[in-house]
Image 1 (cartoon, rainbow, N blue to C red):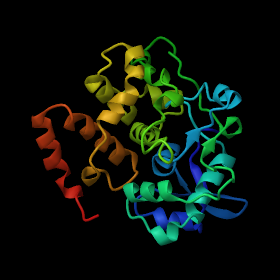
Image 2 (image 1 turned 90 degrees about the vertical axis):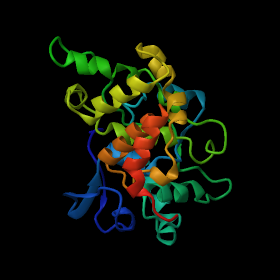
Image 3 (image 1 turned 90 degrees about the horizontal axis):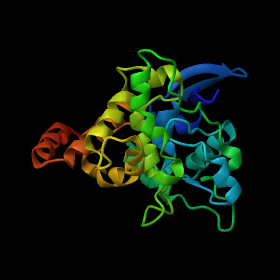
Amino acid sequence: MATRPISVPANDQLVALTSGFVGWQPAAAIAGTPQMAVDRSEAAAAFLVRCKLSRSPADMAAATPSNLLTFNLNDAAWSRILTIIRDGGLALAAPNEPDRLHEYIRAISLPAGGPDPFLINATDWAFMPAWAAGAAGAARAPLAAIRFLSLAPLASLEITSGPQAATGAWTLIAKLAGALGPVGSQPARSQEASQLQAIAATIRRYSAGGAADGPLALNLKPDMLRVTMSAFFKAHTTKPEDQADELSDAFAYKSSAEDRVAVEQKRMHLIQPR
């Protein structure tokens, strides 16, 4: 299923080198091999910052269903990406927090003329179910509250210009995926007291797009570019609750001088030598 966690063998070096800040958990063995797994949303936050969509017409057409509620990669694509991250010098880089991991991933040197393992094409997708309004009842309101997330295709959230475009195209996508948490099923999307609902409400509160779903979706990328948190105050783990807290504070930080001071006081403990 597209909604299942991402798993790797328990003795994989990737687990040992990132377990200090990625929430790997023991999982069911595969063909007798013990596994460690992490939720899709947290895996995206940790490992997908360098991904980018292939812009060929066929690949862009295949990516049409992709948005923050539906996107996921199949096992082969995840394996390809995690392998280059592990084998590209991870042990030497020894990152101790997400920001350092992302710096390392963006700096991985790829062989000239070879295929780009971070390039996402038509064969890489394993989409989760599309957003749906649901049957009449209590679930309709929370589903309506997140509809705008389904109106922003991944292509609209890629960074396509500036210094991050080449090796950090999915920086915003990874950040949002981590903050939203599990989104792949109708029950997860319709739960009123959830991280997904809280982050959607935060975006609605602070967005320049207003209340309508279409403008909210159109403004999601500029809103995210505007509220990128200072490296000093970023979360030290990719755990969904930490990523959500960082994004909520980032929106507040940019909203007023009073909120800026409050966020600085709250996140002061995160400052460490770099």
